[in-house]
Length: 240
Image (cartoon, rainbow, N blue to C red; front, side, top):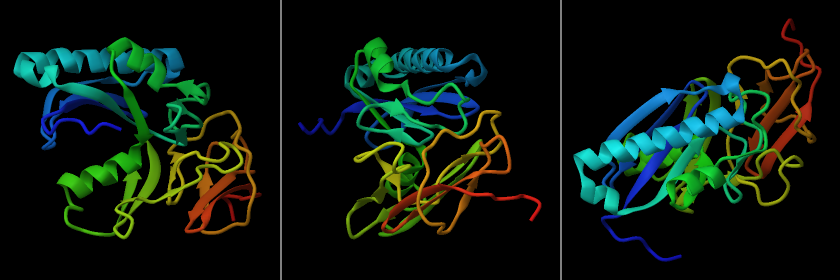
């Protein structure tokens, strides 16, 4: 892969359960043209993708008024989105907080086509931990962990000995080999969906994280360990 020039810029998109936010970002982390809109999750995947495209376009237009030269140096789009997702295919596999119709939605394809730039999709907690390590509270720290407590919950870990975010198979058995995930505590929506969790689950219970997406007390439980993640069905009862 060709190394981008030192003064290259990118469009950054943060897709969350309540907001879609975008900006043009310089190499030093400064942002231009910030734009935001509500996430229309209730209107379905097409509406969410359209909101992402519109917010990115608005951010690019706003940035052009602030620094036209920075816009001319755009080399790509980075998307931070809730998981599980597949960063290699650009598909949201089973996001916990974007509605029951969102699993399997292609994010990278239509957004890249609309903006005319290559797109890189990554799990929001991984993006957050990389940002903190580069510009924030994790600067200069070799090993760190990041917890997300928002519309959904998530976590990511950075290993200094590898100089990268720890990866494991995200929802093994559902995504198949090669799918990316944080070496973390899983992810779940803050509020349950009416539809039952569709993930294929297996494995032993280790450091369980209860997924409230299931429609009954038979909840999907997930955990990621050093040797890999596990997802399984449990007769978890919240009255116990």
